[in-house]
Amino acid sequence: MGIEAVGISKRFGDFVALESVDLHVETGRLTALLGPSGGGKSTLLRIIGGLDDPDEGSVHIDGLEATGVPPQRRNVGFVFQHYAAFKHLSVYRNVAFGLEIRKRPKAEIRQRVHELLELVHLEQFADRLPSQLSGGQRQRMALARALAVQPRVLLLDEPFGALDTMVRKELRDWLRRLHDEMHVTTVFVTHDQEEALEVSDELVVINHGRIEQVGTPTELYDNPDNEFVMGFLGPVTRLGPQLVRPHDIEVFLTPEPGAVEASVTRLQRIGFEVRAELATPDSTPWVQLNRGQAEALKLQVGARVWLRAARDASTLRAAG
Amino acid sequence: MADNAVLERPAVAGPRTRGRETRPRSARYIRRAVAVVYVVGLVILPVWIVLWRTIRQGGSAFWNAISAQSAVHAYQVTAIVAGSAVVINTVFGIGVAILLARYRFPGRRLLDVLVDVPISISPIVVGLALVLAYGTTTGRFGTDLAKAGIHVIFSAPGMVLATSFVSLPLVLREVLPVLEEEGIDQDQAARSLGANAWQRLIRVTLPTIRWALAYGVVLSIARSLGEFGALRVVSGDITGQTQTITLVVDERAEQFEPGAYQLSLILIAVSVLCMVVISFVRPGGQR
Image 1 (spheres, rainbow over the protein chains, first blue to last red):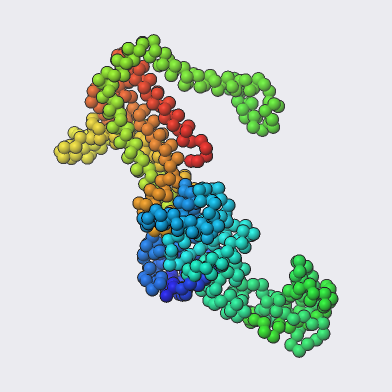
Image 2: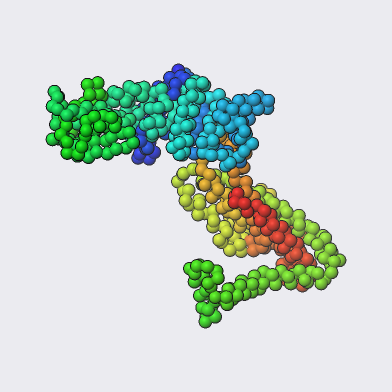
Protein backbone atom coordinates (compact mmCIF):
# COMPACT_ATOMS: atom_id res chain seq x y z
CA MET A 1 0.00 0.00 0.00
CA GLY A 2 0.99 3.63 -0.06
CA ILE A 3 2.96 4.64 -3.13
CA GLU A 4 4.85 2.06 -5.14
CA ALA A 5 7.02 3.34 -7.97
CA VAL A 6 9.03 0.67 -9.79
CA GLY A 7 11.78 1.04 -12.38
CA ILE A 8 11.05 4.69 -13.14
CA SER A 9 13.23 6.21 -15.87
CA LYS A 10 12.82 9.63 -17.41
CA ARG A 11 14.93 11.50 -19.96
CA PHE A 12 14.62 15.07 -21.20
CA GLY A 13 16.48 14.93 -24.49
CA ASP A 14 20.02 13.83 -23.59
CA PHE A 15 19.58 14.65 -19.92
CA VAL A 16 18.82 11.65 -17.72
CA ALA A 17 16.51 12.90 -14.98
CA LEU A 18 15.78 9.50 -13.43
CA GLU A 19 17.34 6.11 -14.02
CA SER A 20 15.39 2.98 -12.99
CA VAL A 21 14.37 4.37 -9.63
CA ASP A 22 12.37 2.25 -7.17
CA LEU A 23 10.51 4.11 -4.44
CA HIS A 24 8.21 2.77 -1.77
CA VAL A 25 6.30 5.15 0.47
CA GLU A 26 4.25 3.69 3.29
CA THR A 27 0.68 4.82 3.95
CA GLY A 28 0.32 7.64 6.43
CA ARG A 29 3.98 8.62 6.54
CA LEU A 30 5.68 11.89 5.83
CA THR A 31 8.49 11.24 3.39
CA ALA A 32 11.04 13.76 2.17
CA LEU A 33 12.77 13.51 -1.22
CA LEU A 34 16.05 15.28 -0.58
CA GLY A 35 18.80 16.14 -3.03
CA PRO A 36 20.52 18.89 -4.97
CA SER A 37 18.68 20.76 -7.73
CA GLY A 38 18.60 18.89 -10.99
CA GLY A 39 18.96 15.57 -9.16
CA GLY A 40 15.57 14.30 -10.28
CA LYS A 41 13.54 14.59 -7.08
CA SER A 42 10.93 17.00 -8.48
CA THR A 43 10.60 14.87 -11.61
CA LEU A 44 9.91 11.82 -9.46
CA LEU A 45 7.24 13.72 -7.52
CA ARG A 46 5.62 14.97 -10.73
CA ILE A 47 5.59 11.43 -12.11
CA ILE A 48 3.82 10.21 -8.96
CA GLY A 49 1.32 13.05 -9.35
CA GLY A 50 0.85 12.38 -13.07
CA LEU A 51 2.10 15.81 -14.18
CA ASP A 52 4.94 14.05 -16.02
CA ASP A 53 4.92 10.61 -17.60
CA PRO A 54 7.81 8.21 -17.04
CA ASP A 55 9.61 6.76 -20.06
CA GLU A 56 9.75 3.44 -18.26
CA GLY A 57 8.38 2.02 -15.05
CA SER A 58 5.08 1.95 -13.23
CA VAL A 59 3.37 3.80 -10.39
CA HIS A 60 0.79 2.32 -8.04
CA ILE A 61 -1.06 4.41 -5.48
CA ASP A 62 -2.82 2.51 -2.71
CA GLY A 63 -2.52 -0.65 -4.78
CA LEU A 64 -4.22 0.90 -7.83
CA GLU A 65 -2.41 1.23 -11.14
CA ALA A 66 -1.70 4.92 -11.71
CA THR A 67 0.73 4.79 -14.66
CA GLY A 68 -0.78 6.66 -17.59
CA VAL A 69 -3.78 7.79 -15.53
CA PRO A 70 -4.17 11.57 -15.97
CA PRO A 71 -3.68 13.64 -12.79
CA GLN A 72 -7.34 14.65 -12.66
CA ARG A 73 -8.26 11.01 -12.03
CA ARG A 74 -5.47 10.11 -9.60
CA ASN A 75 -6.94 11.88 -6.60
CA VAL A 76 -3.65 13.32 -5.44
CA GLY A 77 -3.19 16.70 -3.82
CA PHE A 78 -0.36 18.74 -5.30
CA VAL A 79 1.24 21.82 -3.75
CA PHE A 80 3.59 23.90 -5.90
CA GLN A 81 6.60 25.98 -4.94
CA HIS A 82 5.05 29.17 -6.30
CA TYR A 83 1.61 28.47 -4.83
CA ALA A 84 -0.20 28.23 -8.20
CA ALA A 85 -3.10 30.13 -6.64
CA PHE A 86 -6.08 30.83 -8.88
CA LYS A 87 -5.56 34.57 -8.92
CA HIS A 88 -9.07 35.47 -10.04
CA LEU A 89 -10.78 33.48 -7.29
CA SER A 90 -11.20 34.34 -3.61
CA VAL A 91 -9.49 32.22 -0.97
CA TYR A 92 -12.82 30.49 -0.36
CA ARG A 93 -13.34 29.67 -4.04
CA ASN A 94 -9.73 28.50 -4.37
CA VAL A 95 -10.24 25.95 -1.60
CA ALA A 96 -13.68 25.02 -2.95
CA PHE A 97 -12.35 24.46 -6.50
CA GLY A 98 -11.87 20.69 -6.33
CA LEU A 99 -15.21 20.20 -4.62
CA GLU A 100 -17.02 22.36 -7.19
CA ILE A 101 -15.44 20.30 -9.97
CA ARG A 102 -16.78 17.19 -8.22
CA LYS A 103 -20.22 18.83 -8.11
CA ARG A 104 -20.68 18.36 -4.38
CA PRO A 105 -23.76 19.98 -2.80
CA LYS A 106 -23.29 23.65 -1.87
CA ALA A 107 -23.91 23.10 1.84
CA GLU A 108 -21.29 20.35 2.00
CA ILE A 109 -18.77 22.54 0.15
CA ARG A 110 -19.38 25.43 2.52
CA GLN A 111 -18.89 23.26 5.59
CA ARG A 112 -15.78 21.55 4.27
CA VAL A 113 -14.14 24.77 3.09
CA HIS A 114 -14.75 26.46 6.44
CA GLU A 115 -13.30 23.46 8.29
CA LEU A 116 -10.19 23.61 6.14
CA LEU A 117 -9.78 27.38 6.39
CA GLU A 118 -9.95 26.99 10.14
CA LEU A 119 -7.34 24.25 9.98
CA VAL A 120 -4.93 26.52 8.09
CA HIS A 121 -5.89 29.60 10.15
CA LEU A 122 -7.30 31.56 7.23
CA GLU A 123 -10.98 31.79 8.31
CA GLN A 124 -10.94 35.58 8.35
CA PHE A 125 -9.38 35.76 4.87
CA ALA A 126 -12.07 33.74 3.06
CA ASP A 127 -13.18 36.65 0.88
CA ARG A 128 -9.74 37.96 0.00
CA LEU A 129 -7.96 37.44 -3.28
CA PRO A 130 -4.65 35.53 -3.25
CA SER A 131 -2.82 38.75 -4.16
CA GLN A 132 -3.91 40.17 -0.79
CA LEU A 133 -2.18 37.37 1.13
CA SER A 134 1.43 36.94 2.21
CA GLY A 135 3.51 34.11 0.78
CA GLY A 136 3.04 31.93 3.84
CA GLN A 137 -0.70 32.48 3.81
CA ARG A 138 -0.88 31.70 0.11
CA GLN A 139 0.93 28.42 0.63
CA ARG A 140 -1.41 27.50 3.49
CA MET A 141 -4.33 28.24 1.18
CA ALA A 142 -2.77 26.02 -1.49
CA LEU A 143 -2.47 23.25 1.10
CA ALA A 144 -6.11 23.60 2.16
CA ARG A 145 -7.07 23.52 -1.51
CA ALA A 146 -5.14 20.31 -2.06
CA LEU A 147 -6.59 18.72 1.10
CA ALA A 148 -10.18 19.68 0.24
CA VAL A 149 -10.66 16.77 -2.15
CA GLN A 150 -9.42 14.27 0.47
CA PRO A 151 -6.55 13.04 -1.66
CA ARG A 152 -5.03 9.62 -1.21
CA VAL A 153 -1.60 11.19 -1.23
CA LEU A 154 -0.40 14.73 -0.74
CA LEU A 155 2.57 15.81 -2.88
CA LEU A 156 4.49 18.99 -2.10
CA ASP A 157 7.11 20.32 -4.52
CA GLU A 158 9.56 22.56 -2.58
CA PRO A 159 6.57 23.95 -0.66
CA PHE A 160 8.60 26.41 1.39
CA GLY A 161 11.20 27.24 -1.26
CA ALA A 162 9.80 30.69 -2.07
CA LEU A 163 9.36 31.82 1.53
CA ASP A 164 11.75 33.68 3.81
CA THR A 165 13.54 31.89 6.63
CA MET A 166 11.24 32.81 9.51
CA VAL A 167 8.00 31.90 7.72
CA ARG A 168 9.68 28.79 6.43
CA LYS A 169 10.49 27.51 9.90
CA GLU A 170 7.02 28.29 11.15
CA LEU A 171 5.32 26.50 8.24
CA ARG A 172 7.61 23.52 8.67
CA ASP A 173 6.51 22.96 12.27
CA TRP A 174 2.97 23.55 11.22
CA LEU A 175 3.14 20.97 8.40
CA ARG A 176 4.52 18.43 10.85
CA ARG A 177 1.65 19.06 13.30
CA LEU A 178 -0.89 19.00 10.49
CA HIS A 179 0.42 15.66 9.33
CA ASP A 180 0.24 14.24 12.83
CA GLU A 181 -3.43 15.22 12.90
CA MET A 182 -4.43 14.16 9.39
CA HIS A 183 -2.20 11.15 8.68
CA VAL A 184 -2.45 11.59 4.93
CA THR A 185 0.39 9.93 3.03
CA THR A 186 2.67 12.85 2.21
CA VAL A 187 5.73 13.21 0.00
CA PHE A 188 7.59 16.48 -0.12
CA VAL A 189 10.56 17.57 -2.16
CA THR A 190 13.27 19.76 -0.68
CA HIS A 191 16.90 20.61 -1.19
CA ASP A 192 17.20 21.82 2.41
CA GLN A 193 18.66 19.05 4.59
CA GLU A 194 17.67 20.75 7.82
CA GLU A 195 14.07 20.91 6.67
CA ALA A 196 14.12 17.25 5.66
CA LEU A 197 15.73 16.08 8.91
CA GLU A 198 13.34 18.11 11.02
CA VAL A 199 10.02 17.31 9.38
CA SER A 200 10.12 13.87 7.81
CA ASP A 201 9.49 10.33 9.08
CA GLU A 202 11.52 8.95 6.23
CA LEU A 203 14.20 10.42 4.02
CA VAL A 204 15.00 9.53 0.43
CA VAL A 205 18.26 11.03 -0.81
CA ILE A 206 18.29 11.46 -4.59
CA ASN A 207 21.24 12.52 -6.73
CA HIS A 208 22.00 12.27 -10.45
CA GLY A 209 18.70 10.52 -11.13
CA ARG A 210 19.34 7.73 -8.62
CA ILE A 211 18.29 7.03 -5.06
CA GLU A 212 21.41 7.15 -2.89
CA GLN A 213 19.89 5.99 0.38
CA VAL A 214 16.56 5.57 2.16
CA GLY A 215 15.94 5.59 5.91
CA THR A 216 14.83 7.56 8.92
CA PRO A 217 16.56 10.90 9.43
CA THR A 218 18.58 9.47 12.32
CA GLU A 219 19.69 6.40 10.36
CA LEU A 220 20.84 8.48 7.46
CA TYR A 221 22.60 11.05 9.58
CA ASP A 222 24.38 8.46 11.71
CA ASN A 223 25.01 5.74 9.15
CA PRO A 224 25.37 7.25 5.71
CA ASP A 225 26.10 4.73 2.96
CA ASN A 226 28.43 7.00 1.07
CA GLU A 227 30.28 10.27 0.98
CA PHE A 228 27.50 12.05 -0.90
CA VAL A 229 24.78 11.23 1.65
CA MET A 230 27.10 12.07 4.52
CA GLY A 231 28.05 15.39 2.98
CA PHE A 232 24.52 16.32 2.00
CA LEU A 233 22.99 15.72 5.43
CA GLY A 234 25.53 17.63 7.46
CA PRO A 235 29.06 18.99 7.70
CA VAL A 236 31.91 16.59 7.00
CA THR A 237 35.63 16.97 7.53
CA ARG A 238 38.58 14.78 6.78
CA LEU A 239 40.81 13.45 9.56
CA GLY A 240 43.65 11.42 8.05
CA PRO A 241 42.01 8.78 5.86
CA GLN A 242 38.64 9.13 7.59
CA LEU A 243 35.60 11.27 6.83
CA VAL A 244 33.95 12.31 10.05
CA ARG A 245 31.50 14.91 11.32
CA PRO A 246 33.33 17.89 12.85
CA HIS A 247 31.39 17.56 16.11
CA ASP A 248 32.47 13.90 16.38
CA ILE A 249 36.18 14.71 16.77
CA GLU A 250 37.68 14.55 20.27
CA VAL A 251 40.39 17.05 21.12
CA PHE A 252 43.10 16.22 23.68
CA LEU A 253 45.94 18.30 25.11
CA THR A 254 48.16 15.24 25.59
CA PRO A 255 48.92 12.22 23.37
CA GLU A 256 46.22 9.54 23.50
CA PRO A 257 46.05 6.09 21.89
CA GLY A 258 44.85 6.41 18.29
CA ALA A 259 44.99 10.21 18.32
CA VAL A 260 47.04 12.17 15.75
CA GLU A 261 49.00 15.29 16.49
CA ALA A 262 47.73 18.58 15.07
CA SER A 263 48.22 22.29 15.41
CA VAL A 264 45.49 24.92 15.55
CA THR A 265 45.63 27.23 12.51
CA ARG A 266 42.48 29.29 12.98
CA LEU A 267 39.74 29.85 15.56
CA GLN A 268 36.34 31.27 14.71
CA ARG A 269 33.45 31.99 17.05
CA ILE A 270 29.88 31.87 15.69
CA GLY A 271 27.53 32.55 18.60
CA PHE A 272 27.83 29.64 21.02
CA GLU A 273 29.78 27.58 18.49
CA VAL A 274 33.55 27.58 18.06
CA ARG A 275 35.16 26.33 14.86
CA ALA A 276 38.77 25.30 15.10
CA GLU A 277 40.74 24.73 11.91
CA LEU A 278 43.72 22.46 12.38
CA ALA A 279 46.56 20.87 10.45
CA THR A 280 47.77 17.26 10.82
CA PRO A 281 50.63 15.85 8.72
CA ASP A 282 48.23 14.57 6.04
CA SER A 283 44.98 16.56 6.41
CA THR A 284 43.42 19.86 7.46
CA PRO A 285 40.33 18.97 9.52
CA TRP A 286 38.06 21.39 11.32
CA VAL A 287 36.40 20.70 14.64
CA GLN A 288 33.12 22.00 15.94
CA LEU A 289 33.13 22.72 19.69
CA ASN A 290 30.86 24.64 21.99
CA ARG A 291 32.16 27.60 23.93
CA GLY A 292 32.56 25.63 27.15
CA GLN A 293 34.68 22.96 25.47
CA ALA A 294 36.87 25.52 23.73
CA GLU A 295 37.46 27.44 26.95
CA ALA A 296 38.25 24.27 28.94
CA LEU A 297 40.89 23.38 26.36
CA LYS A 298 42.21 26.96 26.32
CA LEU A 299 42.57 26.66 22.55
CA GLN A 300 44.76 29.22 20.83
CA VAL A 301 46.13 29.58 17.34
CA GLY A 302 49.42 27.66 17.15
CA ALA A 303 48.55 25.30 20.06
CA ARG A 304 49.50 21.60 19.76
CA VAL A 305 46.62 19.15 20.27
CA TRP A 306 45.79 15.48 19.57
CA LEU A 307 42.71 14.53 17.55
CA ARG A 308 40.67 11.33 17.41
CA ALA A 309 37.25 10.43 16.03
CA ALA A 310 34.84 9.73 18.91
CA ARG A 311 34.24 6.04 19.55
CA ASP A 312 30.58 5.97 18.41
CA ALA A 313 31.10 8.46 15.60
CA SER A 314 29.93 7.64 12.10
CA THR A 315 32.94 7.59 9.81
CA LEU A 316 33.58 6.74 6.18
CA ARG A 317 36.85 5.98 4.45
CA ALA A 318 37.68 8.87 2.20
CA ALA A 319 37.83 7.95 -1.47
CA GLY A 320 41.37 8.35 -2.83
CA MET B 1 16.48 70.02 -42.43
CA ALA B 2 17.76 72.89 -40.37
CA ASP B 3 14.37 73.24 -38.70
CA ASN B 4 14.30 69.56 -37.91
CA ALA B 5 17.68 69.70 -36.27
CA VAL B 6 16.57 72.57 -34.06
CA LEU B 7 13.43 70.73 -33.12
CA GLU B 8 15.07 67.44 -32.42
CA ARG B 9 17.93 68.53 -30.26
CA PRO B 10 15.96 69.28 -27.09
CA ALA B 11 13.96 66.11 -27.51
CA VAL B 12 17.13 64.05 -27.50
CA ALA B 13 18.77 65.99 -24.70
CA GLY B 14 15.55 66.07 -22.69
CA PRO B 15 15.76 62.84 -20.70
CA ARG B 16 19.40 63.48 -19.80
CA THR B 17 18.84 66.86 -18.17
CA ARG B 18 17.85 66.42 -14.59
CA GLY B 19 14.76 68.47 -13.77
CA ARG B 20 12.06 69.82 -16.04
CA GLU B 21 12.83 73.35 -14.82
CA THR B 22 16.40 73.28 -16.09
CA ARG B 23 15.31 72.85 -19.71
CA PRO B 24 14.90 75.94 -21.85
CA ARG B 25 11.35 77.14 -21.97
CA SER B 26 11.34 77.71 -25.74
CA ALA B 27 12.23 74.08 -26.44
CA ARG B 28 9.27 72.97 -24.42
CA TYR B 29 6.91 75.24 -26.33
CA ILE B 30 8.28 74.11 -29.68
CA ARG B 31 7.82 70.50 -28.77
CA ARG B 32 4.28 71.11 -27.63
CA ALA B 33 3.50 73.00 -30.80
CA VAL B 34 4.81 70.14 -32.92
CA ALA B 35 2.66 67.66 -31.05
CA VAL B 36 -0.42 69.83 -31.38
CA VAL B 37 0.10 70.49 -35.11
CA TYR B 38 0.64 66.77 -35.66
CA VAL B 39 -2.53 65.68 -33.89
CA VAL B 40 -4.66 68.51 -35.27
CA GLY B 41 -3.43 68.09 -38.84
CA LEU B 42 -3.66 64.32 -38.96
CA VAL B 43 -6.60 63.49 -36.74
CA ILE B 44 -8.75 66.34 -35.56
CA LEU B 45 -9.03 68.36 -38.76
CA PRO B 46 -10.14 65.55 -41.09
CA VAL B 47 -12.56 64.16 -38.54
CA TRP B 48 -13.93 67.60 -37.87
CA ILE B 49 -14.55 68.19 -41.57
CA VAL B 50 -16.58 65.00 -41.80
CA LEU B 51 -18.54 66.01 -38.72
CA TRP B 52 -19.04 69.55 -39.92
CA ARG B 53 -20.25 68.55 -43.39
CA THR B 54 -22.66 66.08 -41.82
CA ILE B 55 -24.04 68.79 -39.58
CA ARG B 56 -24.26 71.29 -42.44
CA GLN B 57 -26.34 68.92 -44.53
CA GLY B 58 -28.85 68.81 -41.72
CA GLY B 59 -30.72 66.34 -39.55
CA SER B 60 -33.09 65.01 -42.19
CA ALA B 61 -30.23 64.34 -44.62
CA PHE B 62 -28.45 62.50 -41.83
CA TRP B 63 -31.50 60.43 -41.04
CA ASN B 64 -32.20 59.69 -44.72
CA ALA B 65 -28.60 58.60 -45.31
CA ILE B 66 -28.29 56.32 -42.35
CA SER B 67 -31.75 54.74 -42.76
CA ALA B 68 -31.58 54.24 -46.51
CA GLN B 69 -32.22 50.69 -47.58
CA SER B 70 -28.70 50.24 -48.96
CA ALA B 71 -27.26 51.53 -45.68
CA VAL B 72 -29.37 49.21 -43.56
CA HIS B 73 -28.34 46.31 -45.75
CA ALA B 74 -24.71 47.37 -45.37
CA TYR B 75 -25.09 47.33 -41.59
CA GLN B 76 -26.30 43.75 -41.81
CA VAL B 77 -23.49 42.68 -44.11
CA THR B 78 -20.95 44.43 -41.88
CA ALA B 79 -22.36 42.80 -38.77
CA ILE B 80 -22.27 39.34 -40.33
CA VAL B 81 -18.83 39.67 -41.87
CA ALA B 82 -17.09 41.47 -39.00
CA GLY B 83 -18.95 39.43 -36.38
CA SER B 84 -17.99 36.11 -37.96
CA ALA B 85 -14.39 37.23 -38.43
CA VAL B 86 -14.10 38.31 -34.80
CA VAL B 87 -15.57 35.04 -33.53
CA ILE B 88 -13.25 33.01 -35.78
CA ASN B 89 -10.20 35.01 -34.72
CA THR B 90 -11.10 34.84 -31.05
CA VAL B 91 -11.38 31.06 -31.10
CA PHE B 92 -8.28 30.76 -33.28
CA GLY B 93 -6.35 33.30 -31.21
CA ILE B 94 -7.02 31.59 -27.89
CA GLY B 95 -6.28 28.16 -29.33
CA VAL B 96 -3.00 29.06 -30.98
CA ALA B 97 -1.90 31.20 -28.02
CA ILE B 98 -2.36 28.21 -25.69
CA LEU B 99 -0.50 26.03 -28.17
CA LEU B 100 2.42 28.48 -28.44
CA ALA B 101 2.59 29.27 -24.72
CA ARG B 102 2.36 25.76 -23.31
CA TYR B 103 3.73 23.30 -25.83
CA ARG B 104 7.08 22.75 -27.49
CA PHE B 105 6.81 21.11 -30.88
CA PRO B 106 8.66 21.10 -34.19
CA GLY B 107 7.68 24.14 -36.25
CA ARG B 108 6.61 26.18 -33.24
CA ARG B 109 8.85 29.11 -34.16
CA LEU B 110 7.63 29.01 -37.74
CA LEU B 111 4.00 29.11 -36.60
CA ASP B 112 4.85 32.01 -34.29
CA VAL B 113 6.19 34.00 -37.24
CA LEU B 114 3.57 32.85 -39.74
CA VAL B 115 0.59 34.15 -37.77
CA ASP B 116 1.96 37.69 -38.11
CA VAL B 117 2.22 37.50 -41.91
CA PRO B 118 -1.44 38.42 -42.64
CA ILE B 119 -1.23 41.75 -40.85
CA SER B 120 1.93 42.75 -42.70
CA ILE B 121 0.73 41.90 -46.21
CA SER B 122 -1.13 44.59 -48.15
CA PRO B 123 -4.88 43.83 -47.94
CA ILE B 124 -5.21 44.22 -51.73
CA VAL B 125 -2.71 41.40 -52.17
CA VAL B 126 -4.66 39.31 -49.68
CA GLY B 127 -7.80 39.91 -51.70
CA LEU B 128 -6.10 38.95 -54.96
CA ALA B 129 -4.65 35.81 -53.39
CA LEU B 130 -8.06 34.76 -52.15
CA VAL B 131 -9.57 35.33 -55.60
CA LEU B 132 -6.80 33.23 -57.17
CA ALA B 133 -7.45 30.44 -54.71
CA TYR B 134 -11.22 30.49 -54.43
CA GLY B 135 -12.49 32.32 -57.57
CA THR B 136 -15.42 30.46 -59.18
CA THR B 137 -14.04 30.29 -62.69
CA THR B 138 -10.30 30.49 -62.30
CA GLY B 139 -9.59 29.67 -58.67
CA ARG B 140 -7.35 26.78 -57.71
CA PHE B 141 -10.01 25.37 -55.35
CA GLY B 142 -12.89 27.69 -56.25
CA THR B 143 -13.99 25.79 -59.37
CA ASP B 144 -14.47 22.57 -57.41
CA LEU B 145 -16.24 24.40 -54.59
CA ALA B 146 -18.51 26.10 -57.12
CA LYS B 147 -19.47 22.70 -58.54
CA ALA B 148 -20.43 21.69 -55.03
CA GLY B 149 -22.60 24.79 -54.85
CA ILE B 150 -20.36 26.81 -52.54
CA HIS B 151 -19.53 30.27 -53.77
CA VAL B 152 -16.73 31.93 -51.85
CA ILE B 153 -15.73 34.92 -53.93
CA PHE B 154 -18.26 37.74 -54.42
CA SER B 155 -20.27 36.46 -51.46
CA ALA B 156 -20.24 36.29 -47.66
CA PRO B 157 -17.81 33.37 -47.14
CA GLY B 158 -15.07 35.14 -49.08
CA MET B 159 -15.67 38.39 -47.22
CA VAL B 160 -15.48 36.62 -43.86
CA LEU B 161 -12.31 34.88 -45.03
CA ALA B 162 -10.71 38.15 -46.12
CA THR B 163 -11.66 39.98 -42.93
CA SER B 164 -10.49 37.11 -40.71
CA PHE B 165 -7.23 37.01 -42.63
CA VAL B 166 -6.30 40.65 -42.19
CA SER B 167 -7.15 40.68 -38.46
CA LEU B 168 -5.82 37.20 -37.75
CA PRO B 169 -3.16 37.78 -35.04
CA LEU B 170 -4.82 40.60 -33.08
CA VAL B 171 -6.41 38.45 -30.35
CA LEU B 172 -3.48 36.03 -30.35
CA ARG B 173 -0.88 38.76 -29.80
CA GLU B 174 -2.79 40.22 -26.86
CA VAL B 175 -3.42 36.87 -25.17
CA LEU B 176 -0.06 35.15 -25.72
CA PRO B 177 2.12 37.34 -23.43
CA VAL B 178 -0.35 36.96 -20.56
CA LEU B 179 -0.40 33.18 -20.96
CA GLU B 180 3.40 33.07 -21.11
CA GLU B 181 3.71 35.21 -18.01
CA GLU B 182 1.23 33.14 -16.00
CA GLY B 183 2.94 29.87 -16.90
CA ILE B 184 1.39 26.46 -16.51
CA ASP B 185 1.19 26.19 -12.70
CA GLN B 186 -2.46 27.15 -12.33
CA ASP B 187 -3.44 24.76 -15.10
CA GLN B 188 -1.56 21.91 -13.44
CA ALA B 189 -3.05 22.74 -10.05
CA ALA B 190 -6.50 22.57 -11.63
CA ARG B 191 -5.61 19.22 -13.20
CA SER B 192 -4.50 17.77 -9.89
CA LEU B 193 -7.80 18.97 -8.39
CA GLY B 194 -9.72 16.94 -10.96
CA ALA B 195 -10.57 19.49 -13.65
CA ASN B 196 -10.70 18.21 -17.24
CA ALA B 197 -9.45 20.24 -20.22
CA TRP B 198 -12.76 22.02 -20.79
CA GLN B 199 -13.22 22.87 -17.11
CA ARG B 200 -9.67 24.21 -16.95
CA LEU B 201 -10.29 26.43 -19.98
CA ILE B 202 -13.55 27.85 -18.62
CA ARG B 203 -12.61 28.11 -14.96
CA VAL B 204 -8.91 28.97 -15.06
CA THR B 205 -7.49 29.98 -18.45
CA LEU B 206 -10.26 32.29 -19.69
CA PRO B 207 -10.57 34.22 -16.41
CA THR B 208 -6.79 34.61 -16.37
CA ILE B 209 -6.67 36.16 -19.86
CA ARG B 210 -10.01 38.00 -19.70
CA TRP B 211 -8.68 41.56 -19.90
CA ALA B 212 -6.20 40.80 -22.66
CA LEU B 213 -8.90 38.90 -24.50
CA ALA B 214 -11.37 41.78 -24.22
CA TYR B 215 -8.74 44.15 -25.55
CA GLY B 216 -7.88 41.83 -28.44
CA VAL B 217 -11.55 41.41 -29.35
CA VAL B 218 -12.13 45.17 -29.37
CA LEU B 219 -9.07 45.65 -31.58
CA SER B 220 -10.35 42.95 -33.93
CA ILE B 221 -13.78 44.57 -34.13
CA ALA B 222 -12.23 47.93 -34.97
CA ARG B 223 -9.95 46.41 -37.59
CA SER B 224 -12.74 44.30 -39.14
CA LEU B 225 -15.16 47.21 -39.42
CA GLY B 226 -12.59 49.31 -41.24
CA GLU B 227 -11.35 46.63 -43.62
CA PHE B 228 -11.47 47.91 -47.19
CA GLY B 229 -8.78 46.69 -49.60
CA ALA B 230 -9.19 42.93 -49.33
CA LEU B 231 -12.97 43.22 -49.12
CA ARG B 232 -13.11 45.46 -52.18
CA VAL B 233 -11.40 42.78 -54.27
CA VAL B 234 -13.11 39.74 -52.79
CA SER B 235 -16.66 41.07 -52.46
CA GLY B 236 -16.92 42.45 -55.96
CA ASP B 237 -18.42 45.56 -54.30
CA ILE B 238 -21.92 44.69 -55.54
CA THR B 239 -24.32 47.47 -54.52
CA GLY B 240 -27.03 46.26 -52.17
CA GLN B 241 -25.51 42.80 -51.91
CA THR B 242 -21.91 42.52 -50.80
CA GLN B 243 -21.22 46.00 -49.51
CA THR B 244 -20.12 46.73 -45.98
CA ILE B 245 -20.49 50.24 -44.57
CA THR B 246 -16.88 50.97 -45.46
CA LEU B 247 -17.46 49.96 -49.07
CA VAL B 248 -20.69 52.01 -49.26
CA VAL B 249 -18.83 55.08 -48.00
CA ASP B 250 -16.22 54.58 -50.72
CA GLU B 251 -18.88 54.22 -53.42
CA ARG B 252 -20.84 57.30 -52.31
CA ALA B 253 -17.69 59.41 -52.13
CA GLU B 254 -16.46 58.26 -55.53
CA GLN B 255 -19.76 58.95 -57.26
CA PHE B 256 -20.53 62.19 -55.38
CA GLU B 257 -23.71 60.66 -54.05
CA PRO B 258 -25.10 61.81 -50.70
CA GLY B 259 -24.49 59.70 -47.64
CA ALA B 260 -20.70 59.39 -47.52
CA TYR B 261 -20.24 61.85 -44.60
CA GLN B 262 -23.16 60.53 -42.62
CA LEU B 263 -22.06 56.91 -42.87
CA SER B 264 -18.47 57.91 -42.17
CA LEU B 265 -19.72 59.50 -38.99
CA ILE B 266 -21.35 56.20 -38.02
CA LEU B 267 -18.00 54.42 -38.52
CA ILE B 268 -16.19 57.10 -36.52
CA ALA B 269 -18.77 56.78 -33.74
CA VAL B 270 -18.22 53.03 -33.56
CA SER B 271 -14.43 53.53 -33.46
CA VAL B 272 -14.76 56.06 -30.67
CA LEU B 273 -16.95 53.58 -28.81
CA CYS B 274 -14.26 50.92 -29.28
CA MET B 275 -11.65 53.34 -27.92
CA VAL B 276 -13.78 54.11 -24.90
CA VAL B 277 -14.20 50.40 -24.24
CA ILE B 278 -10.43 49.88 -24.61
CA SER B 279 -9.69 52.68 -22.18
CA PHE B 280 -11.95 50.99 -19.65
CA VAL B 281 -10.39 47.60 -20.28
CA ARG B 282 -6.77 48.62 -20.42
CA PRO B 283 -5.87 50.66 -17.32
CA GLY B 284 -5.53 49.32 -13.80
CA GLY B 285 -2.60 47.13 -14.76
CA GLN B 286 -4.87 44.12 -14.78
CA ARG B 287 -4.13 42.97 -18.29
